[in-house]
Image 1 (tube, rainbow, N blue to C red):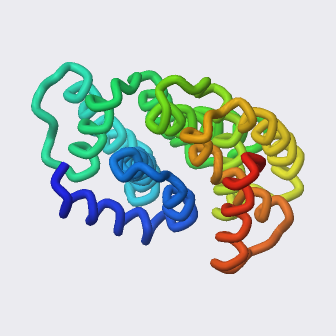
Image 2: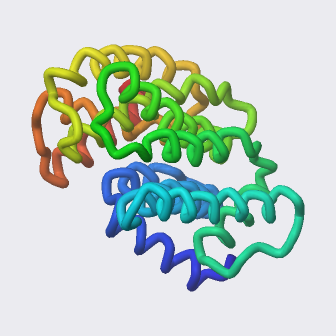
Amino acid sequence: MADDAADDLDDLIRRVDPDRWLTSRFVGDAAAQADLIALYAFDHELARARRVASSPLMAEIRLTWWREALDEIYEGRPVRRHPTAEALAAAVRSRNLPRAPLEAMIDGQIDALDGGALEGAQAVAWADAVEGSAARIAALTLDPTTPSEAAAPAGRAWGLALQLRAGIATREALAPALRAALAEARAGATQLSAAAFPAALPARLARFDLAGRKPGPLAQRLALVLASATGRL
């Protein structure tokens, strides 16, 4: 991907997903950082497909468009001209990333198209399918030898925190699941390599959501610096 296109995508994620953009700054390798941003851009596009569509049917059409983009990427065909699709294709091909987690992210969004609030097991299932899968493939992007499943609980915690922020579930309803996910995330993060550890860092920020806090930029950065330095969420 051209440098200008990579910079544009980085600017996009800094604007629409500032917390995970911040965690990506803890990736030392510039190429790996750009590939991680491509993954987060894909996640953003899937969420946007649900958010901006006028109906569940239109949302499913948008999500199917991304499934077809995956077909192009994994079948080695020319990829549609879209900055995120092109960046994702470059990341998949350069790092030999598996399709299954990306497909699971789409499936998770489609499963949630009924428009109702996610509760209990549904909320956890969505978080696992979408953000748990994103965390797994993020870990593989950063280190292909790391046990990527160890990053999944961190993704689940992040997904549950996003639901709290969106107001689609109450703190009382999600707090037990988020607390459990954070405990699993802390244990799982110890299995990740130093290179893959930033894939789990969003879970450190989810701790603020569990506490009902909205930290400022300095508090966020300090929390992430300490987590990265100690290898503990």
